[in-house]
Image (cartoon, rainbow, N blue to C red; front, side, top):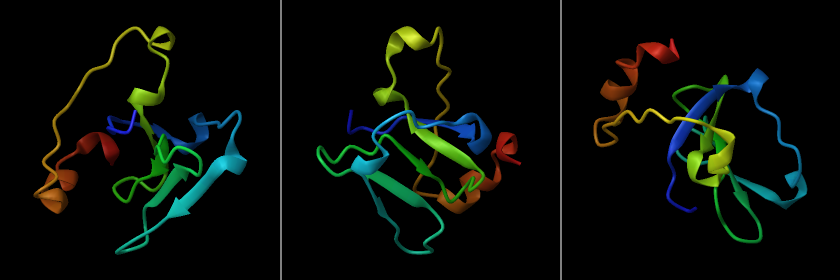
Amino acid sequence: MSGFLHLIVPKAQFSLKTGEEQLTSYQFNSKTANHLFCKVCGVKSFYIPRSNPNGVSINVNCIKQATFEEIIHEDFDGENWEANVSSLTHLA
């Protein structure tokens, strides 16, 4: 579960059902992204991304596979982050 596979959804469509009291936040660099970790196990199941502050990036590895039919994976060039994120038209 600690490998992060991003699934970005609008904040309005995200709802944390339980466990909020077990989360701790970490911010670095620009302090735009809000990384939320479980205080007990250290897994980051979701966070507010710098590339899309009006969305929530959910770790697909933390979702029960029975709750979805298909996942379409798109590669992301993290080494050239700024140039790559500006080319993602679906985040506009």
